[in-house]
Image 1: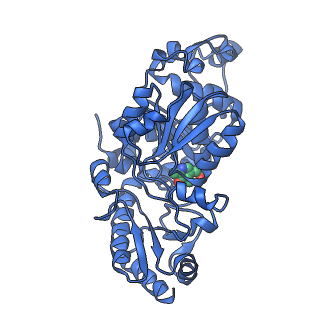
Image 2: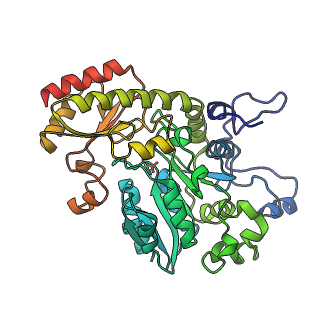
Image 3: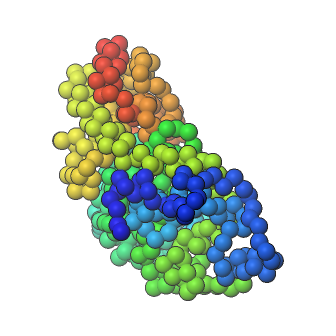
Length: 425
Ligand SMILES: *Cc1c(COP(=O)(O)O)cnc(C)c1O
């Protein structure tokens, strides 16, 4: 039986058997008991599936990963301790020292630093391209050592909207997977695998949790990319892993090769697993995700329309706002809504932005975004302050940009708060 997305949010991932706990239990255990060392040995050899140590797998985390995988329409998934770990592992699973990544420049500041600073130190090269690149422009960035194309479906905080099919087609012509960070739309509003994306990542810290209580991340594999077609490009997946007595992931695990490797090798060795407590909280958030996304999007559209008419507002960027540069591509990929984040600039620039923010009463100044509570941030002076003005421009972040994350309160109250703060700005 295939359910719709709202039903999956509530029901997927955990199905109790007769007499078992109705609610997903928290398996607060690092370890698991077996009758014989021999059986446990088979688990270590990946000859049998089972739990043996929570760094590799935990039943609570697995159930939540299965729910997110079902929501995205993938074949297998894994939770991580943060969105940063999800993007790092998703890339590092197939791209090592000597490799190259093509990435959209319009990405989260933390991911930009991961690619531009830390992964470069590991000997991984990156070329940043415009999120609006054509197929030809993406392909022109390819090198013989390119291993992946990476982008955000809706970028944080610049709110560019990805033409997923254009990026997927280009990646596949280059012979590499398209990896997309789908944090902002969530699978409620966009399922990138349906448009050709191969791997989907998340910072579950945002809408999926939705209440700002637990950091987390997820990686979901569509199972569609044929790694075995490019054994020279993806030796980690297509040649024997000596840390498991020479198994070859593509041969032994087929469509689950990528997720099996990221779990049993990358997670085993680097260890950024999600705690079962956080997975339990994440699951509570997921149960109401479809309801919340609808409210976030309705409220955000009302806020965007209000700001767009206001004389002190110079520009408004909301993908779902008619007249937005991305309105067409948003309507195609996200007909039911995009996300709850609106960005805008005031006529008074950077200075007015700071004054406006300090005058808000309902909306709180926080680093966070995509919370049930309305919140606001000035990226240039906070999350993106490590970036130069030129880098800010490259990722589409105007120094005066205010990122307004619209919550699920009553829209009238959010707009009244904006009105009084704009008066003061
Ligand atoms: C927040 C965010 C991240 C990083 O996630 P953390 O959970 O904070 O580590 C990655 N990508 C996007 C789009 C984000 O918004």
